[in-house]
Length: 321
Ligand SMILES: Cc1cc2nc3c(=O)[nH]c(=O)nc-3n(C[C@H](O)[C@H](O)[C@H](O)COP(=O)(O)O)c2cc1C
Image 1: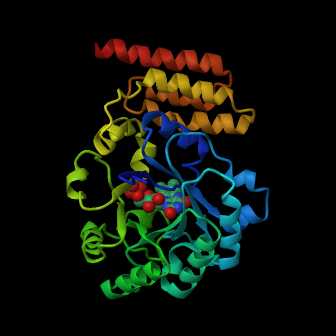
Image 2: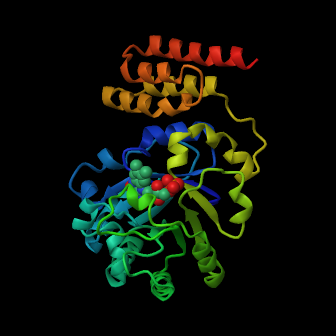
Image 3: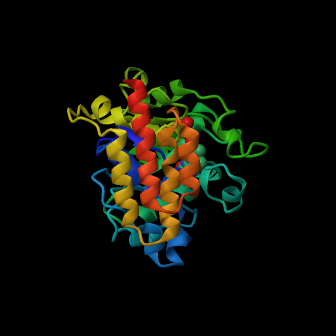
């Protein structure tokens, strides 16, 4: 799997509708699901949380949990779906996740993490990977991180997605934990040169997809979250920059058209509304972006909506000419 460019897992963002939108811009980027707790899969119909869309992009299912049996069972259920890899979330700092004893807090308990990963690995033939932080609270030394990675590698983890900052579980909410602890890319580069047999993908604060390629050339790839959601159009260059593709990317007219085809294939109104919501940022920076946003949130007739959005794109084309 070529992990040169990965779209990060994001709750309430990277659902299958947004992943479909991403797939229209890039055929190659690795797409992560939102985190799904193992028991959400185990206690419901697995389809509800695992049903995927048909895209050419490899898709990674991210699981949350800290009970090895539950994670193993959820991993087993996921075998029936076309995910390319199963990832364990070891980086989420939210208080709710902490109180459930999963996410970032698990970085303090390497033994439990190893047990979880072993159970996941025996439940699937797919690669099992982790998404980590550089540290959690005062579990933040180079020694601690090295030992954590070494221990996970001993059970067979080869690929580490690293959000390049620590998480502070007391006093900072999830949003602050994505901005306040400083980014430290050098620590990820150091890991990469010290653990030559392991693969590292760097994550956090990346907004210019062109410029960072050189800086991170020794890593297996980069992972981007917020910038992709807020400016999905930036994905347009990803196949060219990161996968040497010579194909012409689709323009916004084609993307909007294909999104409406997709929306018309959804029989559930809520799914349709969510898909439309994900389209708002396609219009960011354009003339009449606000009008597009209001339409996408309020216009219920999809034909009228599409016609108006195409009108806005046309208007921008004329002005740019
Ligand atoms: C709204 C939102 C939801 C997120 N949900 C998850 C999640 O489910 N699993 C996870 O590992 N990280 C989650 N993250 C963290 C991102 O994957 C990523 O590590 C973080 O945003 C830093 O990358 P960025 O600066 O490119 O956004 C979330 C981030 C945001 C903004």
